[in-house]
Length: 387
Image 1: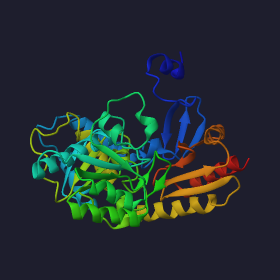
Image 2 (image 1 turned 180 degrees about the horizontal axis):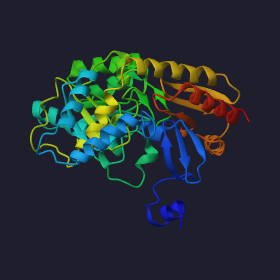
Image 3 (image 1 turned 60 degrees about the horizontal axis):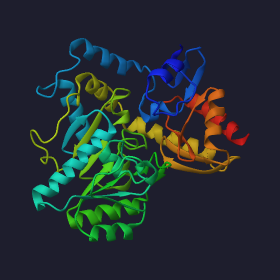
Image 4 (image 1 turned 45 degrees about the vertical axis):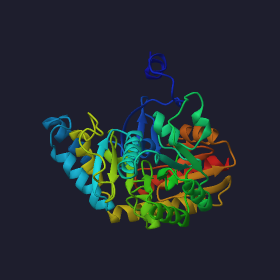
């Protein structure tokens, strides 16, 4: 059996895989098992932030793996300490809990928010408000937090205490908060899986104000849109707010599994010994990869992200077959007249990898994608959409 046949025989059929077996890559170019080249505008769903087989990332991973691949969190390790300090300096947050994925990071945020309210107010103040169209993960709690009814089929009963309001509807948010019993509001500044839909900054600022007035924690999910993806380190920075808890993952370790939950001044001491944990969280190899990634996401790189994002938008806005373009930086959604599945398949035939989000083509290239490769990829995309 070949790779695809073996996968279909032995791996649970939870993914609608496309008929492509990738073997290797370098930067923003990937190659399948037959040697065909593809321009990568997906970066593993916003994970390979510096592309495939990045030399600095690879060196950091190999050096740490040759020293110590794992220790558990009973002990101190330098890469974990360095990464936590970097994240706090980049974000203005105070402390970090490391996990292995975005869903785990969001689980930690949910637990911390409920413990904050329980410690301060006692039982009964455990509600969490999220937005319709949101996506926060596939564990039972984060799936419950996800404001998409289609994802709630088959898995009930769900975790009690979650409610949903429409995105960008501040009056609905205020009404939900005024009903009481709420410990936190959880937002994605750009709803990635929900269709690459940015929130209005006026709404985000209004939610932050309502939360402050009620001592309700503001949780911001930056799993997909964080780590430089939008042209700022975290997307909430575009709106000038400071969350109480921030979650991130995907690009954090540049291709190795790592999540992080960042705590602000109000929440940095909520979780104490024994209240939460992870065997692999902050693994020294993943943390060394994270240091390599986070230390290189600087103002110059993010200026390039903004420039390339504007180039993509300018090329696509009003192009034949394009109905709408949304997003920020290098997180872009494209609504096309053609079915998104047909666009993705035609692009793949022509050596271009793009993704989907609901009814949109989703573009999440490496942050350092060379301009000539990006232009070639967008040429292919515009031609496919117009056909």
